[in-house]
Image 1 (spheres, rainbow, N blue to C red):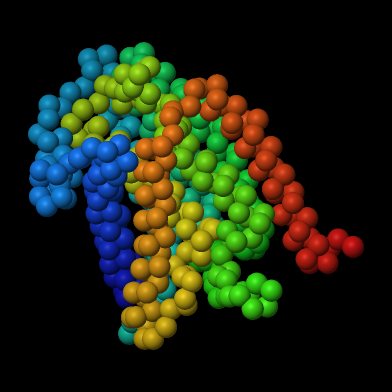
Image 2 (image 1 turned 135 degrees about the vertical axis):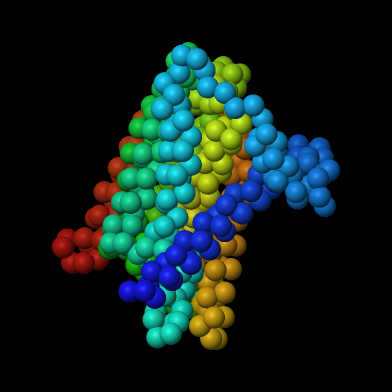
Length: 354
């Protein structure tokens, strides 16, 4: 019992610190990436290639004036950024980042908690995250933040349904709600035409590839990323739900958005791209296998994080009626059809049909 507790605490520290460092690094990657796409310089003054810019930004926000509007609900005003930040971070407790290793006779997976309802846990935490944004819009007793909070709740409802249906398609193939078993079901290789080796990733399944596209679009919407960043449309709502926030309370919203982006990318890798399984299976000692598996996961994760930045640099923001129409009139019916097709294929494969 003592060993398991110590191992869990160590994994919490390693994974949380890794996520926070990656989040800080992504603020630099996004600013440099957007500058590259837009043919300008970007941050390049603080440290080599501007790599210390996230530290400078953090210090600047730390020493900025902290204020609370006089007519605000102070308790909810202070709780909103904490809710957004914490719920976005909690998702990483159930994501498997790498292979397991044996330490002192104990099998230790590189995952904080391998619970039986891991997929439902992730969906629940991401759904609750909208409360932080809604409270941030309502608690200052100001009109622009309130409109941003209402937009966010409507957007979350619109895209959460389609995202959940896309996940159901994966679960029908994996036959489990445990994320570790979802990853294990994508292990190994298959051979196309009996000759060409391919990874057994779900994204290479034609039906699940379409589910991946639905999940990707919904992930962009759920993290309020371009072209779905309507809750903080600066041209219409000043800054949306966090208009009245400053100093470290604003920083927590800012960091929470990046952590949610990392969580969304990690779920894409886990559900559709084999998790920590790479094109070449890990080999060698257990330590080497762990390192290779973590590198596999990290490489795929960074690819999708860069894709989020790429989309922001490429696409304009949708209008609100376009956002709602895409969610209800296109993605939701399409996701329902995918679930029906997935169920029919699994039933036929199991001999339930014909």
